[in-house]
Image (tube, rainbow, N blue to C red; front, side, top):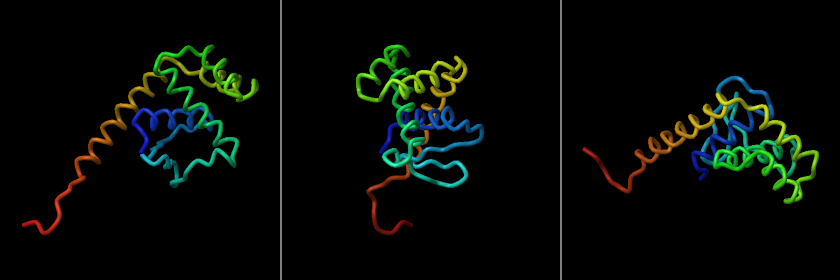
Amino acid sequence: MLSPEDRACLESARRMVCGDKGDIYVFDDGKFLVSSAFALNPSRDPIDALIVAVSQAVKLHLAGVELGELRRDLVAAGMGEDLADSVHDHLSEVSVEDWAQVRARVKFYEDDNARIAAFDTDNSGESS
């Protein structure tokens, strides 16, 4: 199960990479709901791989890692300079307001997880 932060970061990365403007929902199993539900396949689709890379970079930046350091870390991890530059460029274009929106989506997914957890019960049998 993905954390609320992971879900918000994946949503943000999808918006950055694909230019989505409408509603997006990321399920706790990583599937997206844009116009229909789908799962990322980063090992077979380069756009999906970029979404995952941007998502992880967004998460690290939310935790306080500077963009230049993220780029260096991506290159050191074997991503390649061109792709690391692409991720860096995507994140450099994010406005202060957009970062605030990502943080708001983290809160949205936290609340969503709480709502879902409220329905979980270990009770069985009949109710009256």
